[in-house]
Amino acid sequence: MEPQPQDPPTMTESEREPRAPEAATEAAVPFQSPAAQASAPRAHRGRDEGDVELRKLSAYYGSNQAVKEVDLRFAADKVTAIIGPSGCGKSTMVRCINRMHEEIPSARAEGEVLLDGLDLYDERIDVVAVRRAVGMVFQKPNPFPTMSVFDNVVAGLRLTGASRGEMDDRGREALVGAGLWDEVKNRLKAPGVGLSGGQQQRLCIARALAVEPEVLLMDEPCSALDPVATLKIEELIGELKQRVTIVIVTHNMQQAARVADTTVFMLDGELVEVGPTEKLFTTPDDERTEQYVTGKFG
Amino acid sequence: MSANQHALLIDRGNLRRRNAVNRAASWASTIAALLAVAVLILVVGSVLLKGIGALSWHFLTTPTALFNESGGGISNAIVGSAIIVGVAAAIAIPVGILVALYTTEFAPARIAGPVRFVLDVLNGVPTIITGIFVYGLLVVPQQGQSGFAGSIALAIVMLPIVARTAQEVLALVPSTLKEASAALGIAHWRTVLRVTIPTAMGGLVTGALLGVARVAGETAPLIFATSIYRQGMLTNPGEALASIPIFIFHQSEAPSPEAHTEAWAAAFVLIAVVLLLNIVARAFYARSQRRMKA
Image 1 (cartoon, helix red, strand yellow):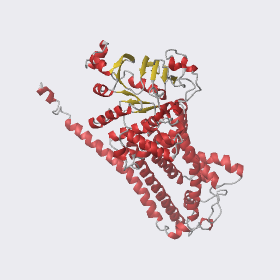
Image 2 (cartoon, one colour; image 1 turned 180 degrees about the horizontal axis):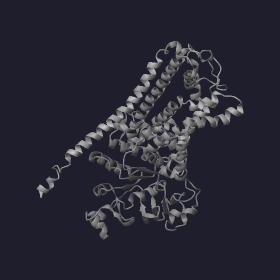
Image 3 (cartoon, chains in turn blue, orange; image 1 turned 45 degrees about the vertical axis):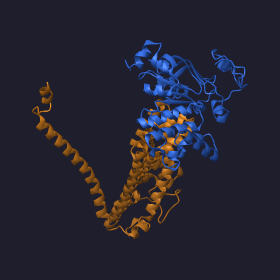
Image 4 (cartoon, chains in turn green, cyan; image 1 turned 135 degrees about the vertical axis):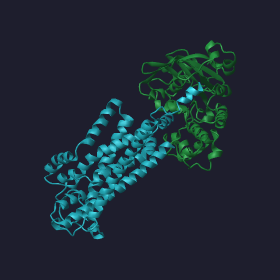
């Protein structure tokens, strides 16, 4: 990010000089949790909010290093796809961004994850709030089985003390945003698990959107879905990138080519190549990338 | 080549023997299953046959006769059992579920393992020992038996049953749901309250009902805690209360054949209640299984 004369006054030192490793902890502005930023009305959101940068990020399971000193930036309002063979650390890396990686016993991460310049691994960070600023959609649709369609969508809001009216508005907005409103508006009180697989996954996307995150992580969101449902999700991703930074892990290279502006190729926990999607799939710089995208391994 | 492959499909000389072993094994297991059912039918049937002479509305609604003579009923024992078991359940169910929540959701593995082991050991303690323990703990210092002492004894018997079943069903809650909740920025304790417990609710109810069913028929802990009681309908757990198991115990020791019949009749009532509790528990369990699979 280049220093801009018209930078908003809340910009911190760390954002002007993103390369200074200690800058993030010396933020000049009073500490503001990511959640507080996330709950600000979306209309006021600047173009460059939701910018994620990994610095020397390593992730471990016990002594096994699954992600090796990755430096990477996910630009705001862009879709970034992460591809690579099974076990290359792409899911692990993504789970470090919302600090879900550490939920697994014996798992830990090192390095920095900067959200708009703020290090999410800083000791002052409220981990629970991080997950409201960085939402996540999982491989298999996982709506809460005890809740209705609507209660699923507002599950995250209900616990942040939102009022009834606010929940109704934002729940509806999230369902519209996830392209599900027309299909479920007459069955909001029906169980969420009664929907089809594709609808359930869009319900999970709506649930993640309802808390208004700046970043949405998608961990192979279509791997359990049929082609029609997959297409709907891919179209949705195209619309959502206006609102959130999207990072999508995918096994499906065609999918990466269809939805992503930028594509990242990983191998054995290392970042091999990152570039504009078209370039990565047509004229990659690295030999391994070329072998992978042409189907020679993986 | 293909002849070689297909040769594997042809009997290699032991096919007849394998089929015979197969048949024998399935017959043996069928017979074992039938035997188990037969024992239950025999027990319930013989209890009913021997007790039917005393079973009547009068029997269910009248307190025990003076000096346990025949001609009375078991209304005081039914009410007493309900109070003793109810108080025991009120103690053991919340504590048991909290223990299970602690071990499955909060405790590190090196604590959860030993706690589980201790619960298994507690589950294996003979109930007469629980009875003696409560006798020493409460009855002797209070200089008298009480329904409350009986409740404490039953709660100790019930606790490991409730806690272990609750642990099992809480562990069955899919981790993907807990993950989904955490990823929404929902604090862990709220996830437990709003996602984990509601999802496991059917199983938790099952465990609680099985615990109640198990202790409803316990006799040994009550002999020391609440077996010498006044005549008539008693409802104050501060004094010794009547109970169905103790009624059966007294009547079966009595010399008259009528008293024995009454013991059988009370036993039938007890079995019926326990059976009913088990059926209800199973229904709840089936419901929760469906919910988890969905």
